[in-house]
Structure formats: C-alpha cells, structure tokens
Length: 157
Image 1 (tube, rainbow, N blue to C red):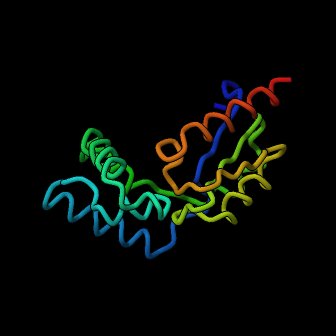
Image 2 (spheres, rainbow, N blue to C red):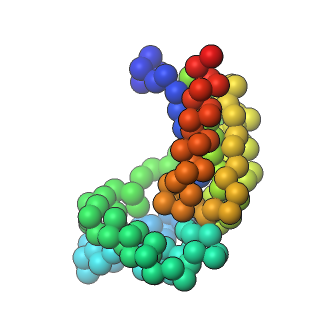
C-alpha cells in the first residue's frame, strides 16, 4: 500500500529468495509439525538468533520460547510456508523514507543483505546496531528505539 506508507523500517531481513536447502528444510519442518505437533522452538535454534554472549542466558531464551508458544502452530507453519520470492527487483519502487537496521552479530542475515536493501531503496539509510544478534528488539531495545527515533526525526524534517 504505497499510498498509505509514510515510512518503512526493515530490521535484520533480506530481499533475497530462500536458498533451495532452506526451502527443503522448511518443507520437512512443515511435515514434521503437522505429524507431531508444534512444541516450540529448540534451544539451539533460538541461541543461533542471539549474540554469542547472550546464548547462555536462560531468561532471554525462556522469553523467546514463551513468545513462540503464544504464537502457536499456525503462525509457525505460516512462517515456514512463506514464498520468499526475489524482492530485489522491486526495491527501487519503494518511495517512502526507509531505515534498514542490521545487527553486527546477526548470524541469520548478513551485512551484505542489509547493504543490498539500503542500496536498492532510493534514499534509504542503513544503521548498524553493535553487540547484538538477530533479535534486536529483545537484545538491544534501547539501541533499536534510538535508531528508529533518530531516523524518524531526521526524515520528517
């Protein structure tokens, strides 16, 4: 809805399509979940989303597990079934102010993917959050809020 979007924040994401091995893994997880049910996300999967120094912290892992449980089976299956087509050709059509946030220790999305977004969207700004993994709003809420607030103040001038 380009006419309604006044701004866009893209955080730790990518416009690239899923690699074939990711599509295959997701298909296997869908079949497994439909057969056995959804029991939440594994600790190793959650740990990979965090900064290495936060992986042993039980509180953050428990919070993430509780979030996954609240979202439940349907949300998990919907996330796995998303058709992540190549969005790169459409980036140049994004016309609203855009902030791309990438976290330095994000092992799920690369800096290259973040730069690709920022370079592909006219006028987009890239902000890097230091000492943070993929779960920026949980790991570094103050830094994420500051990045968004500062960008919002500057883009509204």
